[in-house]
Length: 327
Ligand code: 13P
Ligand code: SF4
Image (cartoon, rainbow, N blue to C red):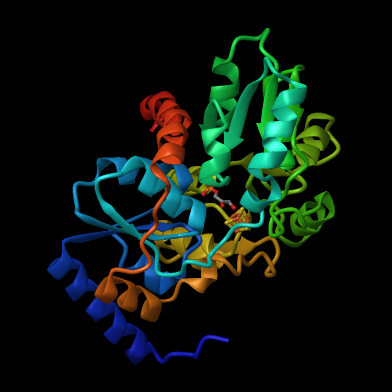
């Protein structure tokens, strides 16, 4: 259990982060799920796609990624000539771990002509075996860009896969049965309950949620009378910014609530989590004291073997190219 810090202790550590950032010419990229004290000292806070795009743009010699390991790996792949560090080397991701390179090789052997589309929540080795990398904000567009007659292997998130299949109407798409332990627990019953407790609220649902496809299906059939929007975390931020006066129920990791409350200003009581237990313990492993140590000692460096990075860079760059117009 990490020690509980007082507000003054956190402020002092944040001051040290800001000093070290200047001294080392470092740039901090953080995910929307990070703790508030990390978000407040980061130079950029966004979703997985935004983090990759930002990494590619930065010219700082030292880049600190506050997010889970695959996010730091993506930055390291895009910045082979820079030092990329993470404050917590054991911040993994249950979804990224749900497929191994060996399993993917076997799956590919069963479908030798298929195009392999991997969600960005995958290890560098899995990306190196893929044709495209996608995030929740561009998966639909990238699937649509693949010729209709090509078979697709989509991995590893089955809920995102089913959502994309439903939205695009793609028939020849096989989906790997992986899931994220935080999002998989969301059910349509959670949405129905929230609709009763917060009538008139807009539900912001991440496509990794267990209910995303079900909810869209029930809504299309008129069996769910709720205003549901399925978005990546970055999409949620943009939507709330454009509609700051509404009430929201948010179905994703609870760290996003701090990010969204900054967009809404005084209205944070109009933001409710769908489930209080949607906490990603991996994201929460990154604390401000670890960030200070990481900057001081320039640890933990994230290194991807060059032969893996070279191959993994191809699908990531393809994704960045296809996404650059939409943001
Ligand atoms: P986003 O790319 O939507 O931020 O999602 C990343 C993630 O890990 C969701 O659990
Ligand atoms: Fe991975 Fe789930 Fe955590 Fe996102 S919330 S980083 S998918 S374990």
